[in-house]
Length: 466
RNA sequence: GCCGAGGUGGCAGAACGGUUAUGCGUCCGCCUGCAAAGCGGAUUAAUAAGGGUUCAAUUCCCUUCCUCGGCUCCA
Image (cartoon, rainbow, N blue to C red; front, side, top):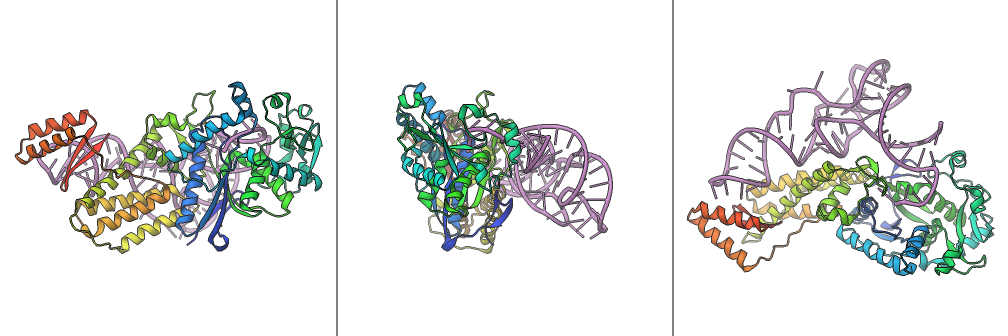
């Protein structure tokens, strides 16, 4: 039983292997010119689930995620708002990190920034020029795709079509062929005024987009990396160009498995600001809790489109609540025990674990894995109902273990209640003892109006804060 | 135009040759002082359409229709 991953390069699911159980993984990160939208977070979440599952199954993962802090948009926006490029991007890098934390996405080991690796980009460019894969024109350096025999192997793109449909104005950029792409762009006058340029032997330049990933993946992970992740829209041209650069440089295959996650759509359409269906994480957090959003993001298989609508998000919220409810119910029960329960693992639990792994092994089938979690939740509820001391803790541990692989967290914090509230709860318990239901219900209603929900259980009253 | 993904119940969403899971929603029971949760049951022809292969197709093949995406910055 081992992990199978769909590899965009080969177009089939392949058995995943890694030397000595060490995995080198590179993920395309954000361009920090605005807060990431929820679709961006989908791809980061997919990478996170992959990483967590690999770690769960005994791999050591070294994970690098780049941060694009210099490109057309970051330059334009920082300039428009009157900030230096660094001031501007630093702000959004912090927003991005905060978002990762909110969604319980484990940090990568390294987050290299494009602007901190310029020297290496210049060096790679020089190599490519020397090897005849690039040419200089009007202060820019372009990659000559006709020199790279395998160009198009990742995206299976038809080169003729690019030519025909290309909207790039070849005169404007002075490329030999409109399909060629820039390794280094000659800095414009505006960029020079704004201080966004680097000295090079070809004049003042700034990096093109694709070169940073070639440089940073090889620099931080080496010339042969195991997994490269990103959204489907990066397959062409970004990753295609990355392959052209890296492989021209090393002469061999650099990335073993290309993993691409599908888009998140909103009401069936791709998010775009002009259509008004653009959601940042912050927007959604106004209405939904982080755990529910994470649940939503993994509720569809990563290679399928995930549609955000009021119904689908509602579904996720309800499903997540169900798991959370089960968790909290079990925690409350196990805490009420006076004696420590025996940690028994029965065959049933092993079965849950195995079906979970089987689901995840099949190209990270998270919906199926969630199904296992729901079955486990039902199993837990049954054990709690029968007040099975032996099993509840053990089952709960498995539940936590598997939830953790998916990055789902359920708060078990016992709320710290103000004395006033505690008194009321106590008063209500007294009333219930003497079967004064009217008073008990009255107190319950009162607390409810203050966002404190009381649930009576055989093992005492449970307090839920809204 | 070319390339790709997909069309499964009220809503999501798995399975992929032989009981159509799982959850949500709705309804009914059980439980509970009541409530909530939980448990049990129901939701009466759910696999876009039409052909074909097969003992058997949702699953494989062909055709048609529809949706979305890529070919330009994009997760």
